[in-house]
Length: 321
Image (cartoon, helix red, strand yellow):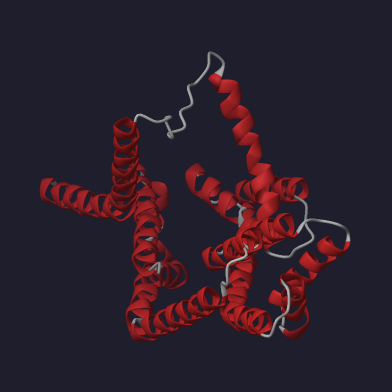
């Protein structure tokens, strides 16, 4: 028993250590890099004896009210995500649906006497989060489609500018000659311009609806061209080339790691499938997990370890370019 407990402790330490490494270490490295750059900025400002360029903000006496208002901004953020996914839902209705689904699922689990309250809560949370997961899935797929079509749109705009068209005509070419979702978003931009909006404001609204770094570069280049009158055709052509190369590299990486990702999926599904098989074929093997207090502890531990392991594999497989 002591050896078994020691093995469990070592396994838990290794698992949660891996989870800490894949989540906290990269975040801490980025924070240290940002702090180092901010320190250099302060040092340069001090040497130049100029105004302090670092923005500082102090928490007031009623800072908890500010935190609560910021938490209410989750609804605004959810609405932005829905708009980015090109869906017609409202954030309030979505939040109400999440709560109703979670509550109904919990009641159903209690009615069918699903063992363990924590397991009932986990099932309720998972079912309740399905609408949000669907919205995130639609948003991610739409952003990928937009990113894949963006280089062609930038090339069209650069050729229109090289042919002597102005910015308004170049944006209209994108709205007419591309395909969705690029065409849809640029048509919204043209509608805003037709209603009297400024080009800079309409471009920034486009960048807010489609939060892609490459599109932000395009918007920044066009805004700078309007303000300075510089020739940015070469810059846009280079940007288009960089986007294509990055997408090509991502496709190659996905192809080369297909076997490893399939192995990760098999590792995640193997315990679940095995448990389901034993539940229907030999249910007496699993009864101890639901009837014995120690079995309950091990069952909950297995669920937490499975979730954490899936999260670790997802973080490892999510390579950012």
